[in-house]
Image 1 (spheres, rainbow, N blue to C red):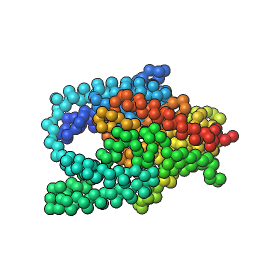
Image 2: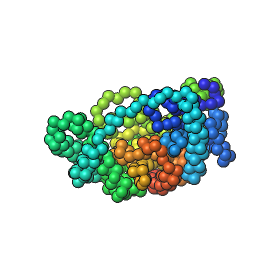
Image 3: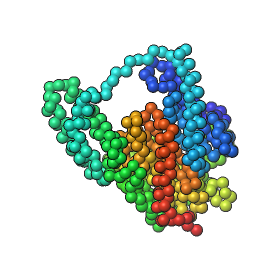
Image 4: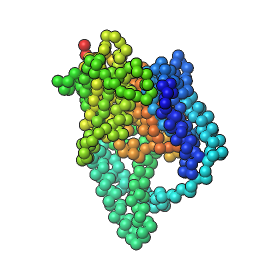
Length: 434
């Protein structure tokens, strides 16, 4: 690893190349690029110095057909420019995929046969058709706990009925559980896609009830409590001196004069937030990734380069209750806490999670997805930013890829939702305290 070329995107490409030539069944090849932007010009695979100068740090992975993963940090970039950056990234991904295809023809092994272990389609269709009303009776309730309890009862009822119906037919009984699960998910998807009706009764563009509270805790430097439906996050802000900055040996900062970290955001997801009992251990994947995403979203507005603001800023977000997108609630909680602490941020930042359900022809974009829509849906697209533009973005999808128009529409819908969340934050605390 040198100090000029970040190795992360190369790792994705190396994995894509290895899978392309292996005997592993793979709907690839896939490629990955990093995109920067300096003076309005896009750069593919920028160096570490160029990333520092760029107002965009965008990582995109995908295949020849479409984009499948996005992660970005930005300095308030507008939606139209972000779409152009994504299109530019995909053009370069296609070039990499073409090279991998040539490589696979020269060095590739024959692919293994795939054993299809998905439940029988006829059984799934039979359950969906015969039990449509029963399934629908349990799917729709604004309260997460009541809905989950009702769905458990529905699944038990259907399971008992079909266990009796197919008694002695072991081949069918073996796949009954998976078939019921698929039937429930497909029933929900069908209703959302065709009718635009969501499990809690909202329309596709609706956000759950919002509440923003700043300065709830009297003893800390700053605090923010942000609630969106049944998702609630408390963020605490503490100011430290310059010597409280974090020093770390990082692979892409081999230079000893690399700046220390003066802005930190940590995210905690205790088990009680989803009604679970499990031991509290060190930070897991969720804590690391969600903490980093919210940190990236907020860092763009913190005045770290100003001589009159030498402080170290430390944020901790605790999820008190979770039903979808606690990372974006942490962004909102972080904004409230920093303004409460009197940090002169350049603008409030808010975040929203967008979802998608598709039957291949029709694409239904959903604003402010909750847990059940994430599990049953095709996309989780988190967008954070100010009124001026985007500061962080993260996308993953279960589809082969997402068409450019759908990405554009999702960003437009997210912008409208972000402004509504910012309205709620600014109604509580319009600007940082003196």
